[in-house]
Length: 60
Image (cartoon, rainbow, N blue to C red):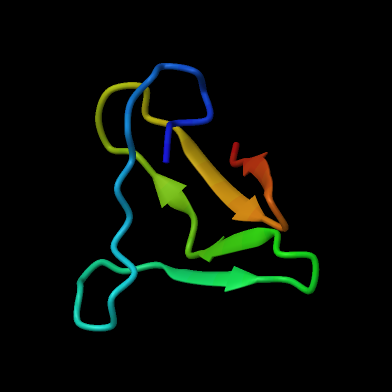
């Protein structure tokens, strides 16, 4: 996915069970994605956000 801050960075999140760290991807009844846990980039733009029901929710 592309970073939602607009910096253009491509974010790769591992979804396979054996990976560490890994994220869980869930789809609601309308097909909107949610990720768990939050996404926190340690370098570059340093974005920190949740993806819930297809919407980005920024962390403080």
